[in-house]
View: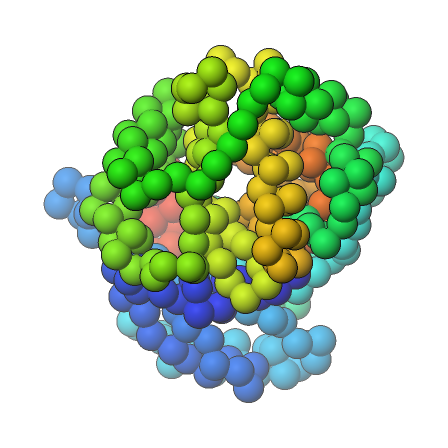
Length: 330
């Protein structure tokens, strides 16, 4: 898995689209960019300092020394900051390792890892997960037959059913950009999840140059029923935003759209497709568990990452911050 979190694409999205303040810092002999996310609720201003995509060295003494310097530098300035660590625990094909025993083993391994990071470095498991603990990528150099073979049986049936139902797909024209946003918002409102704002969407359209992105959509009997935005990053395609009408899930519209995207990506020389981060294996109550199950059904390679951890500067204020944050989000 490429380090998307420290890529130029993500830097641009954070700076140009979301307009989050950013700065750079040297850590573990590498230069990382940080983001500062600010949210004002009532008369309170909440700031989260994040550095996503950190590669943690194996030398524990060296890591402790670097973290100690970091804590001293920001002592009295911040309450805490967050590291998103991209070290891999394990990487495996979703078409295998599906048994319950494997899931239980993965859960125990992750809990053990968290305990080690707590004791070795004083990390706190992040109370708000900003960098997912798992990532799925799809090798689109494979043939359509190989891609279908990697899918689980239910997914294969849905793709074939959607093709039999004469679903089609195509690239969205500029005159349809507004319709995409409206339908995306309708889906978000129905499912109660946050999405990109209208201003941010307009910035995205302004930022992306011709040939570096595309909107693809699936339609049924002339009706648009699913769309996704694809951003190009070298030989990789990243899909950060999309929607589909749930009432068409019985014919597998979301499975169909991803399958056609994989085919088109291969035809145009791309090697991998990223669909974002997902739930860790073995945690069925995780907020992303249901979405992760769908992505896993498509096949691909799942990488279990270390995930997000908080480095606490002021323990008392950190506890108050967590209580306040929990209260506001209830």
